[in-house]
Length: 283
Length: 335
Image 1 (spheres, rainbow over the protein chains, first blue to last red):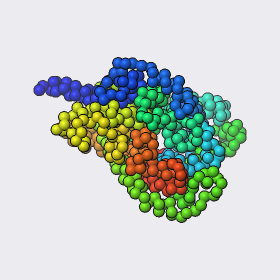
Image 2: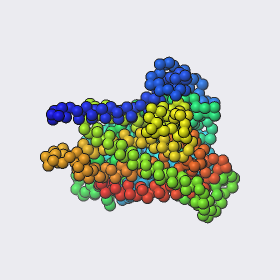
Image 3: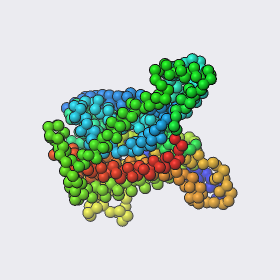
Image 4: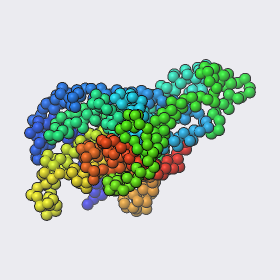
């Protein structure tokens, strides 16, 4: 084999492997969406039917109009959105303040705070669930979304601060100093100079918090006492009925729940990696 | 670390612009300059102390108490029971099978995720720009799917009757792999009832969702390795495997350290996917520690104290791993 032919063969093999990886990653997601559009006779079969040839909106329509667990699916979507957006609004404001403190000032206790951040970021949510459940019940928030929002703020804040601090640190201090020399006060400098420059980082951090809160199952499942407070991940469990699984409906519901996450995710994936691996990946 | 830098600037005795600036800044916010970082930290500290550290202390306390329905309602105070909860938990077979499931699952899932992820990362590095981007975007889909939806998807793929897995296994010639229990075909074989097949499905699900993060991280790490090193290795006649072992692996060691620890932590407390695959906390033999804690605490009759004791065990294991992680990060990063 000539070197050129060998090189070409190597390239073909590599690209084939790439396509296989692509299919491996995408197929299950495709299957979820495709099943949502299949008629029941194509779902409940031992055959492999790659494309929904009996294409139907029946499942989506049923999920969106009939709902599940005595409530409309829109209620669960709304609950999920309220929890996720509430978490983002409160969490991002808090995270920005803390990140500014860490990145812009050297003060006593700074190192301790950073190490605490790293440790609490790793606390298992399952461990926090039981004491937080007691606290939420005692505070009388057992059936209110604000209870969920508070717990989600707590769970997302440490990573949010950790991620945002690098964005704040990346803004050159000389910019702020120039603003001071021009007579701007601290608040003006913060809002007019630092904030616009940190905004992209704030968006990335917010999306991370949004996804975490949107995806949460365990807190929504046990903190909410009535089905009026359920979020999408909890509501989906009710499609697995006693009589057998309504696959068309549950796939349609899962698709509806997945769409916002995938869109947000594609926007911020780069930041996720750099935030999680912190200094480990250089370059 | 001792003083805020702004304080030092403010103490400048000459009537420099620096001094005026800080006087005005201090007046504008009405606070002494040294206190600014602490004021900024207040909301964050309140959340961390009140909603993360305090509950952890509470968890530790509840593990030594009897906390049932009366205590949740607040009609009766919690009753101290000493080590009773731990006694009960440690003498229960379910605890030991849950611990075994947790550890064995984490070991298998972490190893496979790292192997698949690294292989894909290396592949991405060698592909052309467009092809690489194409595959990365594909991987993003697997990564982005919410854990509950991951569970739903794989539960349908592993379905006894209509699942693709059984359909695919039917294609395998019987001399290579015969259907279980002398059946004619794999159709109708349930995967999610018994512990071992259930955990096989869970591993497949978690590896599928977890490999993209590893792959993208490894790719980022590989891009940071100077090309001259590979050039030199090639000139010296080093083969692909040898180059990978002698250059790539040592240089990516810090990346792998962090990825391994993060994967262990995530896989130790896997919950949503298992919850969907096993249809809620039903099959006690299939519990992992998270599921066991939650089942004890929330399935009636509620025993929050016992659940807390199990959570304490899980938390201690995770904290030990976390300490290793924190040391690794602190070593790598000047904070």
